[in-house]
Image (cartoon, rainbow, N blue to C red; front, side, top):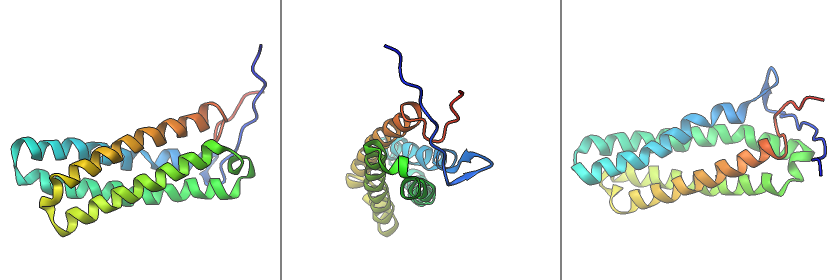
Length: 153
């Protein structure tokens, strides 16, 4: 049985037809994933360099993620076909939980850089798992629902 032809779902938060959310999300994701490695670096070496690196990675990841999420929220609330997708809402909810944890992680480190062990590392690992889940759901939106993708006729 052939798959029914899919229509594109255009992004409202786009520049020259290119959706902004997938463009903006890469740096915060990279920072939050590198945060896990930085925390492990501190765990293994005890070098205070890793405390500073982790603080910066947590901050860039959290704040950059909130900025990138605004483009996703604009699409979620202004595009009716996206709003009707359970996958869209699931992606948004997981992302908000993940960004809340990332923000908490940064706040823990900002007030006490030595909080990296054990809570900082634990929150970093949970955040990384939620990033993987949010990424998988985002991929579902693109590849199964054609959100932000031009589908050829």
